[in-house]
Length: 308
Image (cartoon, rainbow, N blue to C red):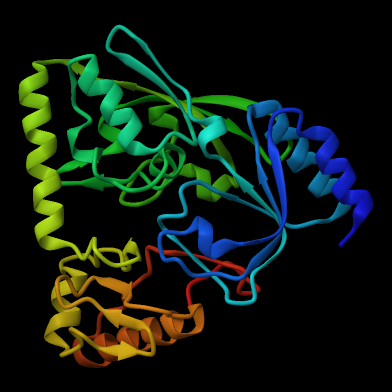
């Protein structure tokens, strides 16, 4: 470890925290991943900006993570700094029908705030397991709704350390995509506009969608959510099932028998096993149907953060 670099990190973090050689399996919904050299939880935008600046000046790679719900980390871990936007960076403020939400806020916290204020429009996202910043960056959606439907504007940190506020129209929002990925921005916070409604109706809709998730998705196992993006004109889970891959297993990794679009950790799965299984699924679906399945999962610590 570079103790000079570590000391510099600690000086930046007046409120945030620093962990060294932190196992990443503790911070992903897949429950998979080796140690990160440095795991930093920042408490505000200034700390985040300073940590990023330090890493760039020292040539140390860094990666932003939220709730770890869409992430597969290498068994070898992550060299450099993992910057966590979590509990310390998760304020939700309400003014009328507008919620201002920091990037680290879990989606259930935003949903709870909306429900308590009798504001409708966020029900579709209440059960999404990730953090708000990640949901904004990937334009997360479910059950007919997407983040682009409710976004007003987004505050981002640029690679140059500048803080910008972008209107929703400037975010280039499309299916599981935003300008965040193209420009290497970091989402700091965003404002969403909801609709005054009745708390009982909002609660009932949230419970209805929660029940649908429990019935259709393998929530009882660790996973990174839906493994593959929806190919144009198809459903990934249906293609995988029709290719005879429901229940296909590699070590502790398995194609869910409940929903074939999910790769699950049925117990003790390694990142290597998950990657091998994903490659096999992609190959068999391509060979059978001529369709390329693109992963929705983000890969970290594999040399290059690209799909296997």
